[in-house]
Image (cartoon, rainbow over all chains, first blue to last red; front, side):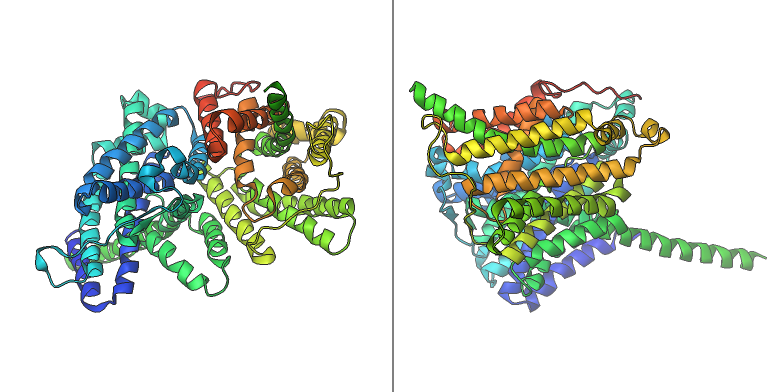
Length: 328
Length: 290
């Protein structure tokens, strides 16, 4: 059963209904869900489809956020023009990190990227660059108004803008994964030696996967910075990376639709858990992370997809059965 | 100038001792299971809180530390039996996921039970400069404690039946099982020992950096760096690597990059070692059969 025509309609509904109905605060939360979803999508391309475990994508998120913030404050660039720049910068950084990553297998890569995530706030605070980064204080940026005199509040416009960028990025990711590059990425994940023997250029594919992944997460950082209107080193502590990882695992590591579920999870769970105690959100994250690993290794996205396959498969079998009966 | 350098080297050795013991804990788990315990630092922090609770309840310092070490040992064994055993043959991602989950849980439990405020931690050692003013009493004392721990771990592995059985289980699980070593329990024991060593390291570092739930995050990184520098499958290498990282960190922090970029230094060490000599200084090269 093909549902591909449903997706654009659902996406349109998901944009129009909240803009018409929701308050500005809830729209801001939804914007952050979309932002996290893009970040997690980047992580998914790397971990889920290429098998390179990164625990340091918060660093790329931070680099994207800072690129946008610096361009907007120091060079007065319009917000939308910062996105391509940020994409290039983050892809470049991703490529650079991808080079040593070539020599590191599973656990070592996780460890090195984890070190990157721990070190990034210190690097951002570094005195020699605080002319641009604003040091410990960080940078404040303005929320953009709706263009062409559209009767929309800044939050409504930002949600539409973010959703628009996200849909392009999702479309690209969908096609990348289903194309030649995606198959090469998955072949490397499943058996790198066999993939190499089949003629796949391992270093090129792996470093480009890293670059694309960093680009996605960095773009998410840019959009997030515009939505939050503020960047500071302490908002990019190691827990950003850890939460992105949690969102990825909960949504399903190699499920493109699951990234939305994972993003909603990391945006909304803290709101509920905060009422219990300040420590509760990460405890809940931790428990759910372990539970998912044991009970649902494919994540929510993978689980739902399997259910869907089961349902449509059974219906398909039933119709085949009735047809067979009618033929008798 | 020379006295300054000497001073930095000495206190580098003192902090290096702590990295060395955490690195040793990491290597013990890595050798047995080929997992790197990302939650090692968080577990050590929690043990340190337990020690502090006992001290505040009026127990003498060494009794409190001893009890916390024993408790940590039991918890370490329990974690291995309950959480890690089912994942023995799972893909890397699953074990990383569980370790990160464990890290989040232990970290938030520390905050939940003991509060996020930064706490002072007492030291049992005299508070005046020693060795001609190069080391504080605590630095000298903690180095001594670390050395005692390292030497007893060495003696345990080298000269006892249990230590031999643990080494055998790590080296070749299948054959060890055939000659009657209970491999599963040896792994659990390794976890327990690692947790106990972490508890001691935590108590030694807490008077210097003060106690808060994220105390060990940086220390864990330095320990990683030390373990990699020395060779992650070589306990002696890890210890030497830990000391070296301590000295590099102190010299680098004082003369090269300044204190703000100290953690970045750990990242640089890790990346350098992994790209130039992935086996570390004393590690073995691992060949795998296709």
